[in-house]
Structure formats: structure tokens, C-alpha cells
Amino acid sequence: MDQKQAQQYLLTKPFTAEVFPFGEGIAVYKVKDKMFATLAIGKMGRRDNTENVGNDNQDYWMNLKCDPQEAVMLRDIFPAVIPGYHMNKLHWNTVILDGSIPQGEIERMIDNSFDLVVNKMSKKQQQSILLLR
Image (cartoon, rainbow, N blue to C red; front, side):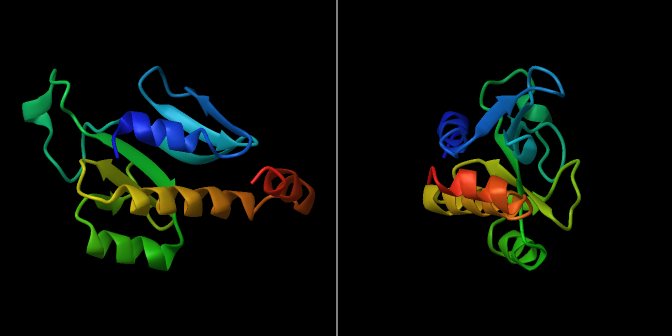
């Protein structure tokens, strides 16, 4: 899954908006004003991208909310899943979109992130979202 496919999939979620509160290069995806994902070109962290500076081949990084136990399991299974960059590392993972994770697995992680955020909303808000699924 590349950045465009990730962006398209994120925007298929009901009541999802793409906003840029941190600047032009960092897309934040919110459901009813609650963040469930971010998407940006990775610049720091586990991988050294210094050789790619100025290169269009830099990997995009996507932050996704995750159940704490599942977050650790995903990090153990996939080298491209690391603790959430600039996020609460207990509840967020960063997924490096380098092509090493199957698209279906990334879509499942996005779905779980979305669901975790929706499940914290009021019953009324949840119902309005679930009607559009």
C-alpha cells in the first residue's frame, strides 16, 4: 500500500475529514473531530532516511491507534511497525509504508484504529456513524 492508496482508504471511513493542523506535510484524519490516523513522509525514527533526503522515494509513515497488546504483537511481527512516532507509544503504532506489509493487513489496522476511536464516542455519535457502514 502506498501513500495514495492509504489516503483513499482512510477517506472511505464515514464522517472522516483530512486536515493539516501541523502544517502542509502532515495529514491528520479525524472522525467527528477525533483523530484516528496521521500520514506524512517519515524523517526520523528506526530507519535512517538521510540518504533519501530530497529523494521522492522516501517512505510515508502512518500513525494508527491500536490496542496496547496488539500494538506489541504487530511490532514483533512486522519490522515496518514501530512504536508511535510523536504519539503515546502504548496506544499508537507507526506503520512505515514501504511495501513490506500486505495491503489487507494495513486496511485491518486502519479499521481497528477507526473503531477504537468511534467506540469512545457517545452512543448517539456511534449510531450515526454505524448507519453509514
